[in-house]
Image (cartoon, protein in one colour):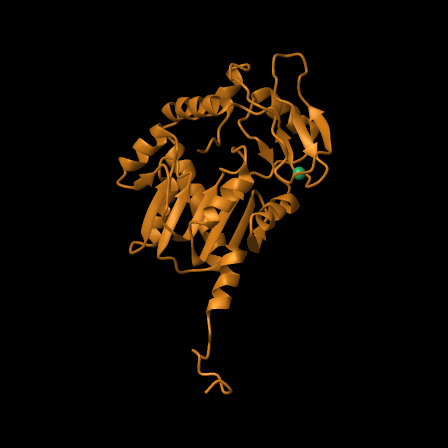
Length: 269
Ligand SMILES: [Zn+2]
């Protein structure tokens, strides 16, 4: 579910059906309209939330137009594997600066398997799996001998969510759902683009109909994780926005269950 190159989309003036308006994930309803509905046929408005500073496209593309976009795009992008691979190599340095050992890894929105290849090369003993809803990407990843699912129930040490959250209508729900797929000591890594906030950029985004619902600021992205029940351990805003986080609830549950004296308290005998 990754669209790093948007050149070819700019040839298509709003053929894509839009869906319902999108409220901000933070629940605030005080917005500033930034650009959109300029009379050139595009219907996606961009709004900036005064609560969390996140910019969003509302109304956003329908589920069907998004899946058509992805499938169409995948057929025309044989180099997508290399883009994913290179990006994951860069993310790996950040992830491993926080933690080195993982025995199970899920790439949420694994695309054609570029990221999975990096993890398989670095953790040959680990369980490496992908989650992907696009059938074209899934087939390409499976052809590279990866296990790719459209739904997961298992728990993992590391879940990577790379360039996915900016595309989905409800990033809060996605992160809460991912929390349920972590082991008690599991961690999440996520990365989204960090778009400079210039009016020129907004107009460009709006006219190219980039299929991004969200344009996060570092502070708002961090807040999204806190609201989804995570403890943010590291954040990097050098180029994109990267976060390394652990589930707050799981950590607390774990602490409550763990008795360092194994019941042999001095006064209890
Ligand atoms: Zn907001």
